[in-house]
Length: 136
Length: 136
DNA sequence: TGCTGTCTTAGAGTTAGTCCAAATTCCATC
DNA sequence: GATGGAATTTGGACTAACTCTAAGACAGCA
Ligand SMILES: [Mn+2]
Ligand SMILES: [Mn+2]
Ligand SMILES: [Zn+2]
Ligand SMILES: [Zn+2]
Image 1: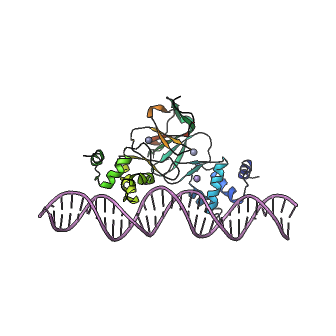
Image 2: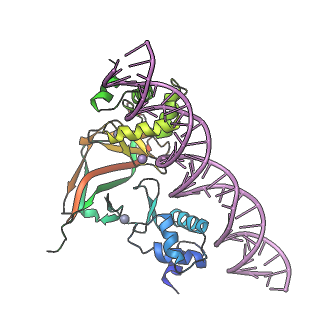
Image 3: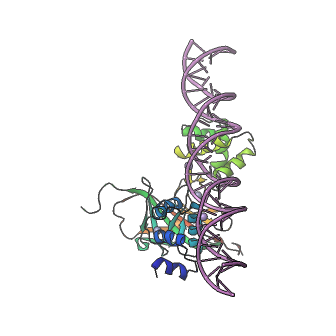
């Protein structure tokens, strides 16, 4: 059985052709795509796929805990198949979103937050990829 | 001269009646309002104010460095007159955004971020205000 | 093969925000 | 105090992201 089909079944999602096609991309990408980007990409191999189905499928995947929806960029959500804790870097020039490994940063609570019940802490770093290439 | 008028002049913004009215609210609020919320609020005292002017004014204030635009909630930007570094708590129930003083958290970089030129680091804490009142 | 519920679809609707071109207001100079 | 060009405001048209709707296609089972 195909890997995506198996994943969907494990999360109690009927693996329709459309859902498998969307999952085949969004469950393994490192691109943090928006819904429209997912649609554009999946349509390449599945041209009759409708926009509504992409939104339905992404929302279903989020609800079933297969991917996360991130609020990072202006106006639109992006989706992330990585569920383990990690941070994000936003390239302010290109809009690209990069994963920052969890152990790159330490967020320490120095004072109490009385009356607040914390569910998640999100660190977003904004900046530019510098001109200098990584490996000299 | 009124306080708002003075602030606008100092930032090289012509203090029109509309801009002073918008500024009178958004430059001093602790609410992190969206543009529509600003419009609703300022219209109470200035009923003929147009939506376009609210957007124009908020964008101008951001460009001139009087307020910041935050991407925290789904679908819409919110505005923040506090320019000093601080963090934010989002009440997932009500949507309210609270300021978290800068020295409540320490974000330490444990590893290098090669090839990334950091401009800003934003910490967003999501959760609920717990039922228990702060002062017993 | 037919029945029933699930899934997909096109298109309408909604919301946040920008754009536009006309009307108004501002203000420096006379 | 008039006047003319520039800045500002305005309503409404437009756009983009997303949801909703209701009809049709499809899947799993009898
Ligand atoms: Mn959503
Ligand atoms: Mn904006
Ligand atoms: Zn990620
Ligand atoms: Zn704030």
